Amino acid sequence: MKKKVKIKVSNLHEIGLLIALISVLLIFGFSTENFFTQRNFMSILRSASYVGLVAFPMTFVLITREIDISVGPAVAWSGVFFVILVKWFEFNYTFAAFIVLAWGLFLGYFIGIARTKLMIPTFITTLALWSALRGYSLFITEGRPLAISNKPFRYFFGGDVLGLPTVTWIMLMVFFIFWFLSKYTVLGTNIYAVGGNPKAARSIGLNVDKIKIITLMITSMFSALVGILFVARVSSGNSTVGEGMEFDVIAAVVVGGTALGGAVGTMTGTLLGVLFIAMISNGLIHWGIDPDLNKVVKGIIIFLAVVINSNVTFKKNSGNKEE
Amino acid sequence: MSILKLENISKSFGAVQALDGVNLSLDAGEVLGLMGDNGAGKSTLVKIIAGNFKQSSGSISFENQNVEFLKPMDARNKGIEVVYQDLALCDNLTAASNIFLTREITKSFGFIPILNFSKMFQRAKDIFKELKSEEEVRMMSGGQRQAVAIGRTKLSQAKVVLLDEPTAAISVRQVAEVLELIKQLKKQGVAVLIISHRMPDVFAVSDRIAVLRRGKLVANKKANESSPEEVTALITGAIESA
Image 1 (cartoon, chains in turn yellow, cyan):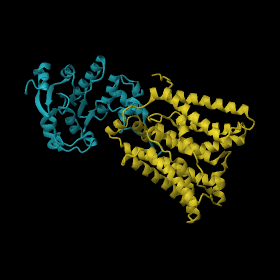
Image 2 (cartoon, rainbow over the protein chains, first blue to last red):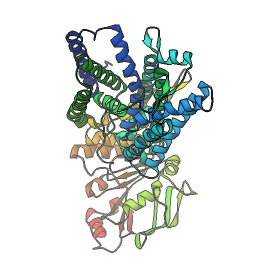
Image 3 (cartoon, each protein chain N blue to C red):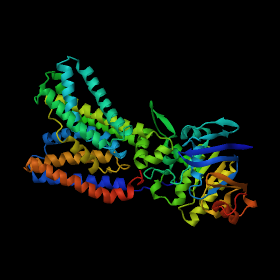
Image 4 (tube, helix red, strand yellow):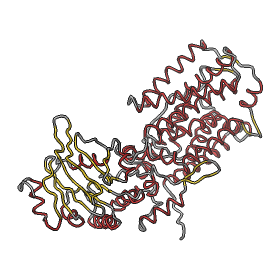
C-alpha cells in the first residue's frame, strides 16, 4: 500500500513560520552590520534557550486549555531561593538545585489543585502568583542582587560548551524530550485528548485533572530550572530577572501555532516560535530601535500571530467546541 | 440466558421520581430498543447501567452476579460500553487514537514505553475495514464518526453495548451504515440496548421493544408482535400498557 504524503494544516503553519524566520534572518542580516556575527548568534541562541526551556512545557499547558502567566516571577523567585539556600543556609549546589526544582513541582501542583479542585482558572491563580512571587523576591533581597562566587557553576552553566551556550544544549535536549513525549507517548496523546474534548476524555475514563496537574507541574519545574540557570549567568540571585518573560514564552508558543483555545500545537512550531521571537528582539536592537518600542513591535507580532492562527489553524484544526 | 438484569430499579432526584420500579433484562445477541418521550427516564436508566449514577433502590445483576457500579470504569471493566449521543470523540486525534484512548498499545523503546502506532492502526483496521484509522476525526462524516465510537466497544470486546440516539443527527445513508454496525454487534453475540426517538430505525434492528413513560416501564415485548403505531400510543399514553 502506498503511503500518501499529506501536508497537514499544522505542517503548513510550520513551513510558513520557517519561511518567515529565514526572511527575518536575511532582512536583519543585510540591513545591519553586526547581525551576522558568531557572537550575535550566540546571544540570540542564549536568550532563545531560556525562553524555550519554559515554552515547551507551556505548549502542553496551552494544549490542555490552561495557561501559566507566572513564569517571569517564578524564574526570579527560584533564582533568589536557590542563592538563599546556598548562601544563607550553606547548602551544596546540587542539593539546593534539587530543592528548588522540587519547589517548582509543588508550585505547579498548587496551581493544578486550585484549578481542578477549587475550580479557579489557572489565569487567576498564576496572575496572583505573578504578583506575589515578584513581590516576595524583591522584599527578601531588598531589591539587591545576592552574589555567588562559585566559579565552576557559573562558568559551566552560564558559559559555553562545544561552541554553543550550555543552556542551548540543555534546551535542545529538552526540546527533543518534549517532541518525543508529544508524538510517541501515552501522556502526549492524553494531553491532546484533554485539550480536544475534555468532556469526552473524562467520560471514557481519562483522568483529566491528573493530566492538567502534571503539565502545570512540569512547567513550573522548568521555570525553577531557568531560575537556577539565570543565577549561573548573572552570578547572583536577582529579584528583577525574567521581567516580561511570561510574555516571550506565551508569544513564542502562540506564534509557533498553538491555539490559546487548546487542542492544537506542536513542539517544532514552538521551537520555531522561540527562535522567531528571540531573533526579532535582537534584530530590532541592531536596528537601533528604542527598547520600549521593541515591546510595541512584539505586541503587534503576537496579535498578528493570533489573527493568523485563528483564521488558518483554529477553524480547521481545533478541538471540539463544547467544554 | 440474560446477561444483564435490572430488578425493581428506582431513581429519584430530590422530589422527582425519574425511574419507578423498572424490571428489564437483556440477552446476549439481543437488540433491545428502549423508547420513550423526553424525560421518560431513558437516559437515567442508561446512566445507571453505565455507572454514572447509582440507583436509589433495586439491583443490577451481570452474568448472574450482583454488581454495583460506583463509577463508569466499574461498568467498563465488566464489559459494558456506552456510545454517547455526542460520541465522546476528540476531533483533534486520529480515529485510531480515539479508539485506543485509555487503552493504548505500547511497545518498549529501550526502557521507555512508546506508542505502537503500526499495531494500533492494524487493529483499528481489523475492527472496521472501511475505517481510515490514520485520519483525524474532524475530517469524518457523521456515519464514520459513529463507526469510530462503536469501534471502541469492539476493541474492548464488550458484552453489552448501550447506544444513546445513534441515528439522531446523521444522514439517511449514514443511518444505514450505523444500523449495519448494530447488526454486526448482534451477530457477534453482543447484547445491544439502543435508545432512539426514530421509530423506523428501532424497528429495523430491534428484537424487542421496551417503552418507558414517566419513569415506569409500560411495555416490554417482541418487536414483531408490536407496531410503530402501538409504540407511539404507548409513549404518549394513549394506551396504558402492553
